[in-house]
Length: 103
Ligand SMILES: [Zn+2]
Image 1 (tube, rainbow, N blue to C red):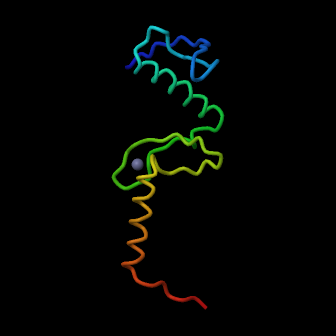
Image 2 (cartoon, helix red, strand yellow):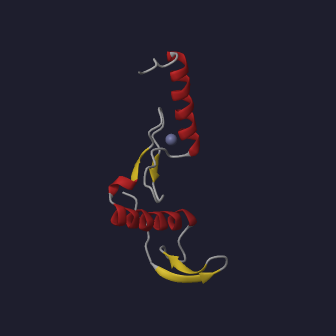
Image 3 (tube, rainbow, N blue to C red):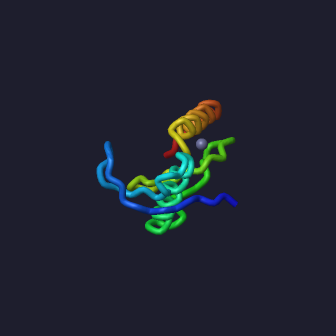
């Protein structure tokens, strides 16, 4: 198990001004990122539930995402995966031929 050193405290430095730090000041940069990610993901889950996190819906991608958008409809880890999936769906529709007219 990975132990992440935590030491929440208020910091005040450029360019952010007054803000929270979550790791001890002596922590290595990867542990600072881990501590901040842990806290921010926890806040997201507490505020919106687990529905705001997930695994990318793109074929062959197993990356995870955290949806901080207002709408909360994210399905992909990145624009690259969203575009690749949309292009594949478009090509599949093109190969299937024109849709039958209704009415
Ligand atoms: Zn992806």
